[in-house]
View 1: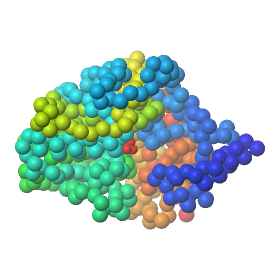
View 2: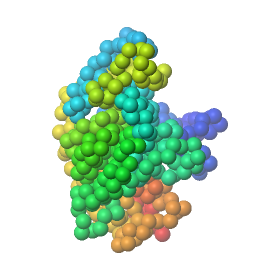
View 3: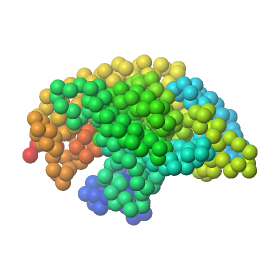
View 4: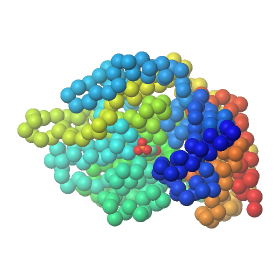
Length: 452
Ligand SMILES: *Cc1c(COP(=O)(O)O)cnc(C)c1O
């Protein structure tokens, strides 16, 4: 009977909801899972079946679902102020959050511009960079440089600076042209080459483009250290150091999209810290509110801010807005999340969790259908292939990753492979034994998916 409730919701869902990033017909085979409640790392459906949220509900959740501390902060905020426009008005949560983010961010970032989702933050950074150069008398700077296999969101500007074919190709006629430079991703390196060496060598292509086209380039946009939507491909911080130096040299902005990798995912609070660099624009969202509410922000420098600061008549202002920009509830959730980071010494504690994850995944290093197990901090990924020696991928239509997904669901773990890359990005409240369970189910799922 309980399972009947699941089915009833799934049926109603199927007749009215159009789901994101989904071929809806697939749900004829694999029914949608309606979630009734969630607690910590566990999601629970209407039949009482539980799923370990190994992917933090699309990389947003940091401290578990229904976290008591974030809940309490939100409930208190709800009785004070739910929302007010952020133009002409302000509120304590937005101000305090800006102060605290600036204090945590790499040195030199002094201004916080709010938006309400990740893609919008990317749009803001792109427009601000372009507009900065105009205000500084360099209107010929109109182009953006991006890395191959990068992802920056789905709105048209963000999609244009991304490079994941699956999401982008169909919309190409609508998108601004961008300059794509080969990614420093370490997966394709030769076995005798270290990741540092590889990332360093891959910078040559970037250096060449920047030297040649500096006059027309506004900014380079990158996902620091991990290209998450691009199948969790990883590279060495050396690339960011070289990129920062080159951008400085040629007068080009550096946009760091830490929407996925910020807030401790890579082992440091921000990924840029590992390269000891400060970008001109730092885009944040996803984990910003601990996974509770949509919010994003772009942090930038006094230098950028100053280029827009003028008499009204000069028409230099940044006229960009979203209705829910800097929503007080979302800001309050973010503040509660930052409190947890501080009170629980989260970055330090995560070190033992990520070490535990590495140990749990160790058996896969020698698996005949695993080309690589890679990890940066709290993000780990397993690259499945048809043949380990030649790294030949499986034919796409075989959808091996999808089999792992189905197996995981059946056995109570939400894994959502990107193609044939099985990855783990759990909330930080996961326990070592839950890590063991998560990886165990994934390994059995992989065995099942590669058989036959
Ligand atoms: C998810 C993501 C975005 C887009 O954020 P949305 O809130 O989904 O619009 C942008 N950049 C990166 C790196 C992301 O992972």
